[in-house]
Structure formats: structure tokens, C-alpha cells
Amino acid sequence: MLQDTGKDKWFNSINNALLLLVTVMVLYPLVYILAASVSDPVKVGLGEVWLWPKGFTLEGYERIFEFKPIWTGYRNTIFYALLGTAINLIITLAAAYALSRRDLIGRSGIMLLFLVTMFFSGGLIPTFLVVKQLGLVNTIWAMVLPNAAAMWNIIICRTFFQTSIPVELQESAQIDGCTNTRLFVSVVLPLSKPIIAVMALFYGVSHWNAFFNALIYLSDRNLYPLQLILREILIMNQVTDMLQMSTDEMESMVKRMYMAEIMKYGLVIVSSLPVLAAYPFLQKYFMKGVLIGAIKG
Image 1 (tube, rainbow, N blue to C red):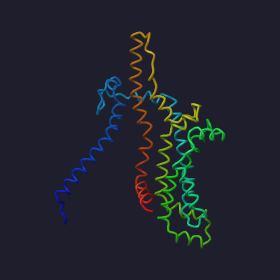
Image 2: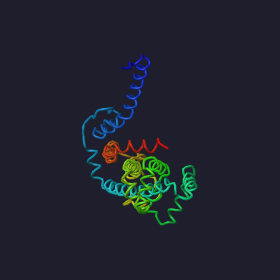
Image 3: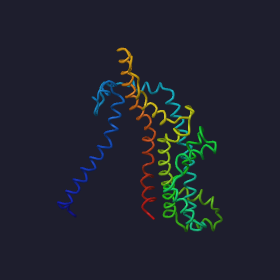
Image 4: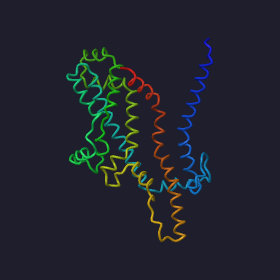
């Protein structure tokens, strides 16, 4: 058996120490947010909560569940994430498969045009004017169509198709009379579960966290996603007129501000739960799909 030398032991020790430090840096904010969300708002506001909850209370979560706009935002975000991810997958997978085919005429030119979009964009104002002229402003389509596909994800999927789907398999299917559409649906997609899971996770998380498009294109509060509702709560009471307030009014305002603080932490937990719950089911495909789609080719 090979024995570790002194240098190897030092390397492993330093490597383990660095990994432990990174783990602590990643986990501590999550632990702190969870602890603060169930702690006494006064203790949180005074900075007494560091790791463990102090003055355990669920009042923050009770206030969150009583706030109706949050549930409306939750419903809208789930709808945007499902619809947007479905559109993203259809466009991304179809474009990637077409670009992976050697018999596509003008494939290099098309790929070059696609790559230009990774380095240059129209900018916010021209994009807004296009969305407005298409009649998408203040509609659900403004949340899912402007970012219907990401070129980097198309490249990853194209690489996966080129390296993981044998050309001989495609040729044999075509010899048997299989059309391009049926080949894509019946042969390529069933063999592409890893990359589909990766793209679904990428796009789903992106839609779940999206708020900028809603901020720009939506004015109807009934269409607001959860993240925009969360943003409004996070900036709530940032500017408050404290002049000409009585002592009782001042104390009441301070209590409301403390309660708003723990509501913010609770909202972070509530808004993150669906993504955290979905990731373990996709982890197996996620690791395989990223490695195959990114390293090869």
C-alpha cells in the first residue's frame, strides 16, 4: 500500500481545513436566518441572536401566513416557474439538438449568430420597447418570454447531445423510417434525462428568484411574484417620519420594525423551501448532467 508522505498529510490537512471553513461560511448565514426567524424580535433587533434562537416564538411566521399578498405571490411564482421552465426546456433542447446535428445546413453561421448574443445585448430600454410593442407589458408573458432561452445552456445541451447520443443510433433510426421530430422525441429525449434535469433546475431556480422583469414590466399587484412581494417587505419602513411622535407611538413603531425584521427572516425561509426541497431529487441527474455537458467536447 502507498503511504502518505509528510507533504501529502500537510496538503490533506490544509485542504480539509479550507473545506471546513467554506462549509461554515456557507452554513452559518442559513443557520442564523433560521434562528432569527423563530426568536424574540426585540432580541433579534438588539443583535443578541448569533447561532441559537432566543425567546422562541412563531409570531413572525403567523404574521407571514396572515399576509394575503404573500400567498398571491407564491401562487404567481409557482405558475411562472412551471410555465417558464417548460418554455425554456422546449426552446433550449430543440435548438441544442438542431445545432448538434452534422447535417444542419449553415450550422456554423447560426451558432456564430447565437454566440454574439452572449457578448452583446440590446439594453434595457430597447428590450422594454420590444416587449411593449408586442403587448406583453403587465401580462404573465412578460415574465416568461423575454428570457425564453439562455445561450450558455444551449451550448451545454448541444455538447451533451454530441457526446452522449451516438450518431449510429440516430442513423439507424432514420434508416427505419424515423422522422427528425420522432427521433428527437422518442430517442434523444429519453436518453437525455440528466441534462434535462440540470436545465430544469437551472431555469426553475432562475424563475423562482426572478424579480427584475416583474419590477420593470408589471404594475398589477395581482401579477406580482413572491420575490417582488418580498422586496417590498424588505424595504418597508426604511424611511419613516419620526417627527412629532408621542412616546407611545414611538414604542409602537419600534415594535413594528422589530416584527418586520423577523418577518424578513421568515420570508427568506418560506421562499427558499421549494427549491431546497426539490434539489435532493435532482442531485443525481444534476451532477451527471453538468459533468457530461461541461467537460466533454
